[in-house]
Length: 120
Ligand code: 5GP
Image (cartoon, rainbow, N blue to C red; front, side, top):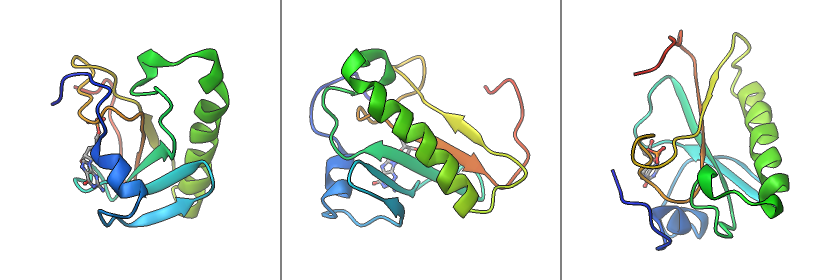
């Protein structure tokens, strides 16, 4: 896992398509693509196309409220698109203790299997 940083991340190259990914949803603000190490039958990452200082949720400012709402609303749309009618899980890892490894905020959408609580 990485140290918190403002350095560019691999997600910039995914946004620019320099690194290929399986995109499942895209609009002017949000990109959603399949996680390379899926933790379930469905595992999608939703990210803002412009990071704007939002390396993680702990860095959120009032100006980020719209994009934060859009990420969650888009997660719902993608869950529907993926057929996750029985439910799904949303995760945002933050910082070292949250196991965040990429410092460009992202919402994990995981589904297609029974989830358990609490997570490890
Ligand atoms: P975090 O641990 O920061 O919450 O989540 C980062 C996620 O990004 C991990 O689940 C990891 O598998 C995924 N990931 C890292 N590099 C790539 C990549 O190059 N392509 C894709 N599709 N996912 C990646």
